[in-house]
Image (cartoon, rainbow, N blue to C red; front, side, top):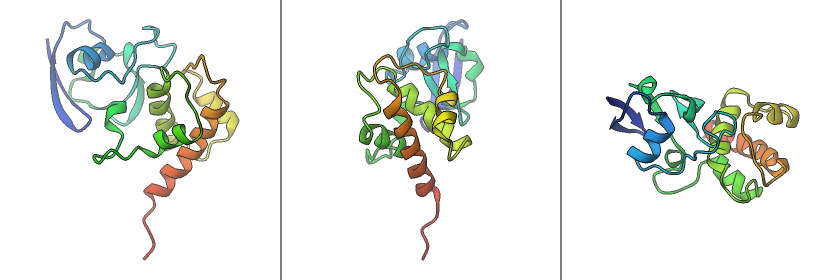
Length: 162
């Protein structure tokens, strides 16, 4: 079956069986391998992407369900000149990663978290990131990165006073 949608601002069509999960269409058909396959059961969050502006675990969505959708993967959040998204920069600055396997999904979830729950407390961040697992960091630096990234996202979205 052919399914068309927009990925990272570009029109895309995949020809895949109807039981294909979005994560596999993204990785295998579109060759965007920054979205990781972790558990295949929507438990770990490594496959998180944005679908129509909301964080979604792409291992839990059939590609047919994404027809006509606007999808953003980790490859699509940096500026065209390569400047990192504020959340990516915060993860780097705060050492919010170690092995890096969970990082793309964690960053995509953190962007969603800060967009829809700005100025969250440490406790709220930990709760809202509950569906994203990291086996390396102990989460402390991830929480710091989310706090910094959220502030930087807010600052970047405010118009500069003349």
